[in-house]
Image (cartoon, rainbow, N blue to C red):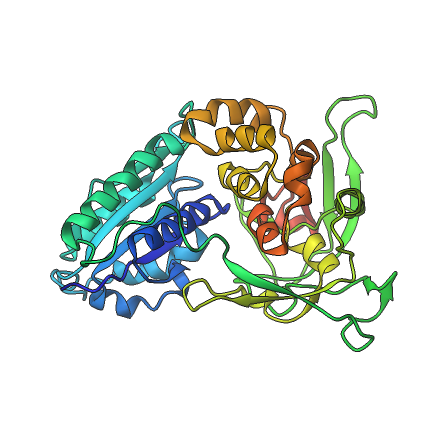
Length: 406
């Protein structure tokens, strides 16, 4: 009998491919599969030949480029020395995320699917080509694609006698989160009102071509009465950094003090006993969903809220499913369930995407669900802050590094 192991890999630039990969992982538990979900570059690609079932979820960005966290994985697969039958034991599925407005629509998923076939892999189903331009978004392709995936996997590896498909995933949350007693020794110094003022969550994270710099000028370029606030931001130039026309600068932002104030006010208004200096420890439930390295030690919640949770993000369907699970109010539960379903995606777009409603604003709209939130649920609701890409607006010879932010 074939082992019930399913490895799920993703290449994600903005986080959406990661969300879908994690959704596949959660649903796999309903079919009693085990296996990790990882960025492709964190997976030991030499182990690929020994896998039986693999799902790859990848986005395409720019001019047909693969995401940063799958570049090494893809480079390895392109080696000419790899035997054409090296993946003969592997059954795989590839799901792509793209935008049909661009000529190289889902180019990464298409070429990955083709390369896996060239190396002897067996495709479980046709490559899924999600289109951001579809009226129903990625779900129009993703939901039928994943349904077909389970049908095919159950056909190849039927459920053992005595096991049945579960009605819902037993893995509701990624991680376990403990609240620790706050003592003077736990806190990071210096503090204002009990929480750190300059602790950098990402200080030890090594990024390719990463560097630290200072903002020299932040100047508004539009008239004060113009509806759009466009900024020309000038950084101190790092002597070791050069660039060419067309290059982009990735900037990892933090939430504003105003956004943080509103979040913790919301907690207090809804009887959630969490403060900025509440010490929390995020722990892995098992090896399948590891905790990011930056969250593995005890941290004040204020640091996580400022630097990890994206408080200005527009929530996706997964967030509404989490809120529905927490909610015991009939009216709120019905609306949240609708927003999280494929049938309700047009309604969700009108409610969240069109007015660009943030996750914090959504929590204000659903007070009963918000009141019942646990810390574990919050780590599902709040998407991680992703680096933003901006075209460099200055020439190398100018001795300044500038970006234009609209």
